[in-house]
Length: 405
Ligand code: CTP
Image (cartoon, rainbow, N blue to C red):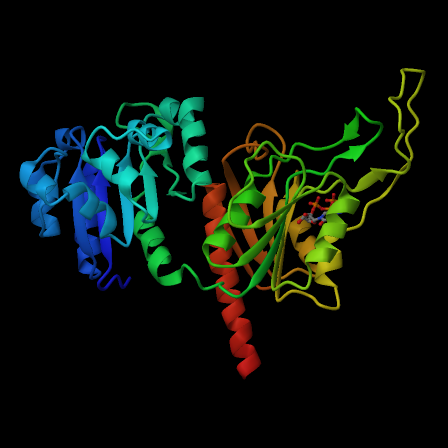
């Protein structure tokens, strides 16, 4: 990791994970970064300003009303200087303040005053993490372009088990490294992502649909966009806020998704994460069907969007599909890799309580290529997205080298 001459402002808020931030400062410094720090009042209950400043080699800022600092407009300078602000650990409280524009201490004032990119590593009790208030705040912050490093699952300091533990510091460092060194590798490339379910109307009120939430596809679109790609997200109906900084096309039926895809190719990268209905209603009724004996609906094949893209005369460099399987997961996914002519299939098991993938933030996946199989158990959908983008970057490089050879 090379962070030579990068200015990082690390905000440490109150949580048991604050001690991990000390190791992080050490590692950031070792990589060449200049690290400034703000310790919130609650953070100072867990670690001391002295240990923070000893490791960073700079003053540890605490108080908004420190006279010396404020004659130099300390909070404005702190907000302007860094290339990146990292909040680790970030409490539910500091995220709530950011979401609502509250500035009542040095950290929150600085966060309101800054125009720099912000990375957040939350840490809290699983109930606090899952509370709709916290989740709404996270959505608000994501919509504003802040990047969230999802907390890990596991046993908490409070004795409870669930999602809420701050991500391992190596993972946070990885995100920081990607931000500086890997972040815009896809600049100049076009990417197409399908996401969400399709709805096949039976009549004006009823439709055939499925349980896809769209979360995985949206996370992939976001990661591709963060990596600099020019992204078109073609989405079926979801409850997710439309991601910023990309072209979002909303459709309902599979045939409309196919049409939108055709309008978006040629493209360099295609990721088909949508749960496309295999069949559409041949002739949907223009008026609501009344209950009148058996319902007779004629279904017909929908276009296979992934197969169409992968065999198109202007085939993208990389085509990625998903395989949601209830049994024989790997074998069925491998068959799909071949029958759909993809470069990569991401397989996941669905159904039952073991892996309630639909709507959940976490999943277990296997990346399957012609000659490789890599599994990742119980990881967040945003981590799957990051891994996929890294895979795509590697695969594109391989192909570029092949061309040169
Ligand atoms: N897919 C697609 N268009 C379709 C059906 C599927 O683009 N009409 C894509 C999905 O987005 C996914 C992959 O194909 O990337 C596999 O989808 P899946 O539903 O698992 O496979 P099917 O082709 O529908 O096969 P089956 O339902 O028989 O398992």
